Length: 266
Ligand code: SF4
Image 1 (tube, rainbow, N blue to C red):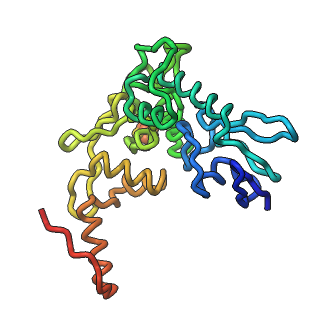
Image 2 (spheres, rainbow, N blue to C red):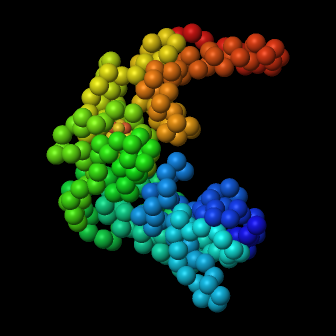
Image 3 (cartoon, rainbow, N blue to C red):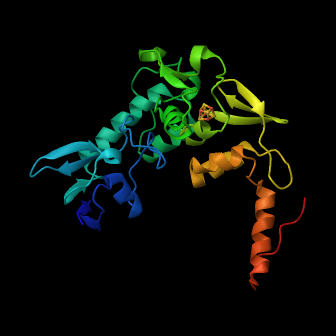
């Protein structure tokens, strides 16, 4: 079992675990944007750069896709690694200067502004991490969206910029978008996938028939990953209120003294 030493702390690792996985499992924060546990690592944003010891010289690698196969010494908080991550963040900020999510992450990294020319045409603050495209293709098996164009014209879009017939409105792309550019919005009985314009009947709670909110879908997907998609599309998902009722029922049935009181029915 290899040992990963991160900033002088030694952690046991499984063979082929990534540095990022070992760090996360042990409470060491390494920033990421294009990483999602449910998808294959892609290392496109470069925000997870760290240094590793290569027998006396230190090499910059991306933690999300660096597999641990033998003992490795890692520097996350070295001056060079911090400077590299801040440089990447300044580039990302130039791409999506108005994104609250990105600004919050930048602030955590000590970056408050960018000195690169701002790409004002950037559509909806997309940082082109590609998570949405990979979620659709890798997990849903539906290439309903893709990265198109080059340079500043590069963007994520549906074929011909029209709402895709392939899209099943599962919400996976919205759930993995780290900057909130893709959103599942609820309009009455209808869901709309913004900004792709795909609309369709909203999925409903299996118990009470209430329309499932975008927040609920996002939370279900974040917690259970793409596995939640099947249940949502099959109409097996519960709304937040019915979930609480079910939980309270289970606690009471189990005879749990100390069970929380039932939520008020409003
Ligand atoms: S909502 Fe549509 S575009 Fe998004 S992941 Fe699902 S099928 Fe793909």
